[in-house]
Image (cartoon, rainbow, N blue to C red; front, side, top):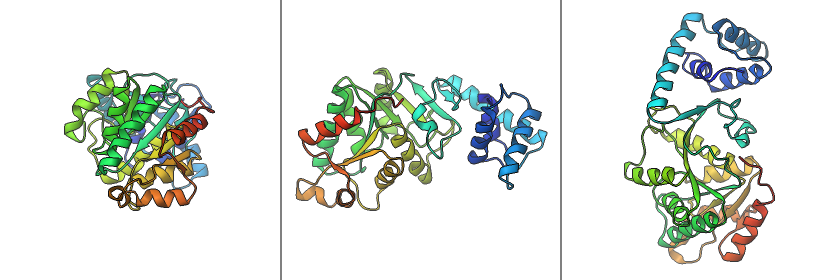
Amino acid sequence: MISTRYVLGLLETKGVGKKTARRAQKLGDEKGPIEEIPALQQLLQRVKQKHPRTQVPRKTKIEKGLGEADKILSRCRSNDITPLVPGNEDFPTSLRDLGDCPPVVYRKGASNRMSPAVAIVGTRSPSEYGRRCAGRLGRVFGEEEFWVISGLALGCDAAVHGGCLEAGGKTSAILAHGLDEIHPKNHTSLAQEILDSGGALWSEYPPGTPPRSHQYVQRNRLQTGLSRGAIIVEAGPDSGTMHTARFALEQGKMLGCLVPKDENGKGLQSGNDQLLKQGAYSVSDEEDVGHFMKRLRKDISIS
């Protein structure tokens, strides 16, 4: 197994990307602890045999990467952030099964196993109907002791987290940037409330990483990866929330959608209409939610 420091060092080494690091990790799982540069280079040589475009950096480059890794680990300690690699006991088992499993994730907050878990997400600009439903869904699943996962964004996500917290439930926010900062800034207090209630913040980006548009798309696969299923509150056909729906389907997860109930919600929920036509479950009333929840409980091994 490649140590956490050496995984971070690989990721900070020029010419080594996440795919190469993950391939090396898989081969490294067959060996004992790998904490020396020559052993790491030998591992990369083995990766290169199957993937000829793989670079095997010189010792000096890896040393420079390890220097950057030490800076990351220092920032993690200063901000109570825990870096986890797939070989760690606390690394979520459900993420290990992803085809593009991240080589490292960062957690701030509780180490509790998130089981069972549901992702509930939606647009940053919901209708009033959508906002109310987001809060209600967060409360209902929180009351039933589900871990409620969302993205701490404006609009639906904030309502979901808030509803779960009101019910005394546990919620986790998956972020698209380093955990040493909160974006949007005005959700700093919400993030702290999540932590104080026994929840957690997660990211695959090291502290100091600013938010970028493509990172929001990538984090959506972790929202569904950590969950048994996902519910879309409101989404336009081209919104980022639709990426979450796509990841859920690709990962074989249950997908539910709110059905429009009034004229004000229809425009924002046109993405929902599309997903419902593709076979997503309706979760628009108490009975729908109960059926969805019952199906989710059939597999409570997600962690």
